Length: 143
Image 1 (cartoon, rainbow, N blue to C red):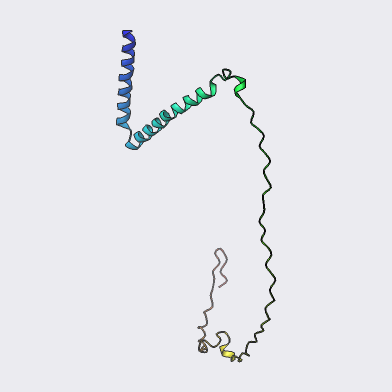
Image 2 (cartoon, rainbow, N blue to C red):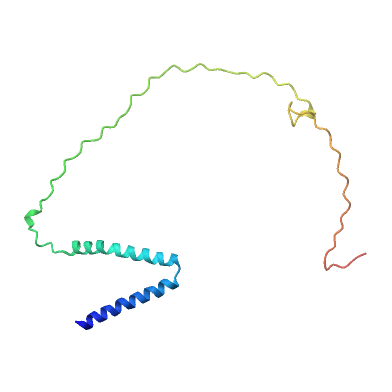
């Protein structure tokens, strides 16, 4: 009996030393993660044991007469669909014809702008570009 107590005490001291060494070397975030995972696992143990007991218990101790067949449910009444009465037909509205007034002809120089802007002034043409010469790499010079 004394040697069991010694083994248990040695395991507890060894676990404490191991926990201290791990705690000294890991960051705070890692320790908090380990603590959270451990608490989650410990919280799931009682639920797992309860499910294990509930699902594996012997069901033959219940008498068969205590189970009563449920009565058949009556057929439900058909659902009443609401359909509103059609709206009475009203007389059609008279047709209205709108005739737009004739448009004045816009002078040729106002065409792209309509009557909103002043006529465009002819812009000066850009200076003619010089002739460009290209040299092809690897080609022989003819000059």
